[in-house]
Image (cartoon, rainbow, N blue to C red; front, side):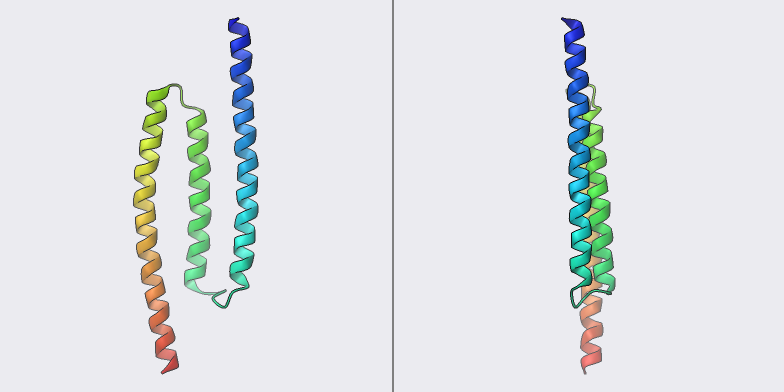
Length: 117
């Protein structure tokens, strides 16, 4: 019985890892599509677009790292700790990114206005 549980747990780990790999592939394809669409836009080669792409890539990588950490959690307490740390880090990161993007957009708008006058 213990041997069957061990095999079942190993199969679940393999399945979870495969699912994460498939999701990573899908997100990488989406990010590639996103980048191609952004370069086709009128704002293609702006600092704002470059930052959006950079942040999107970093956020996706961080999320997949988080999923892998969850898969390695040994118990519920560790799972909750990983989740809590991830949420705290993400809230701080997203706040910083939003501030930076807002400043970049405001600068771009100001520069565009100066050029048009």
